[in-house]
Image (cartoon, rainbow over all chains, first blue to last red; front, top):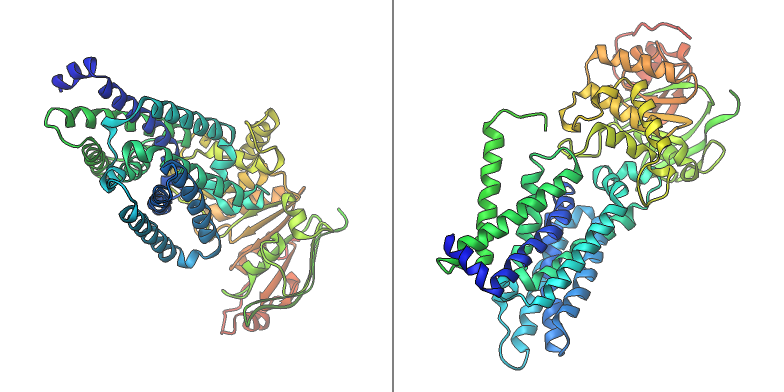
Length: 275
Length: 244
């Protein structure tokens, strides 16, 4: 750990990595709160994996992979949203199919992409140590968009997340708000995928919020707690991985999983408070 | 009190080939407290969904406050039989009641002073004001029903529609809730679905018995014969008072 802190002071790439982790925690904590309370972790996973298909296609045709990722993410968010609204009884099958096919298409395109091979592992687990400075600004801008949208629509989004039927009877645009929520999740996935990788996006979208829901009494407090937990977990994971030269992403994920397990056990064993 | 709050005219509804409701005509005048009873799968919840405009009749016409149900929807307060939300959702009682104000304000931004005032009034009326800061998952069944009633009242409804409001709570609380409804009925038309004719007939003005078709809709007419028609079994004769 001390080795990490002395390295942090002298190495710019570590400072960028730390900043990337903190910025990722903000977006993931806010959107993760909706993912957890609305129980759409599986939908988020489907969106995240379909993104790989878009990135692969963009690389193959010689475009910016982030453009492909963005188009694929928004398209899959809308398709998955439409599936859950229209074909709820086949929801899991259809999303599983989209998940697997999206990823397979990505791998096929990557295999056929001319030039030196694109590393699939870097899309799955990312490399937080290689985040360019300009990506940090992009992440900060995304966080600003997410915070702004959630502040403006906090109450109707709460109503839709809490009780869709009641929100519909009150005349709220439930379908629009639901699809907007999925598109915001998709946006979060896209902008974080190059930085922290597909798997870490899903881990950060679900685990800090899942821990937070055990302690927070309101959605707002849950968001704040999830962001704080995400920040603590990514920073600690980064620090722990540095000295033994472990990959940072998987270290953060294992740490987050362990924290969730411990928190759940503690809640089961200790008497419940009023929350 | 004049005019009709709800008017059903020859309403038939079918899920595919299965007819759930057949030629139901019913008029609910403004200010009435109407009970709807009938066996499970007798079409009670379907009838409510038609009134709420969540379903469209296969034949016939539904009018609510003289308009199509979907247009009159914001004038209705509704308590579903099974809450459609997760009990462990991180939300407080006060926040839930305030969501009752959402249809009456613009989408962006916060609640106004009148929204807060109406929510506080609704919580006071249903005696849950002191629970405002509590997380929804910590409430008892009876408290939760009162909170959902407060949310419905925060909508400032002209008509209150309740689907088995007391099916999951104990009997003493059941009387409390119906006493409360009787008070609210001075200003609001109330439609309540129940499985317990004997109990609700002490409160309601009229009972509509529904088993695919409307079998009767007068309190006085319910006797052993009607109940046998309705439930198809040998039901012990129930005593009921005519307090209205």
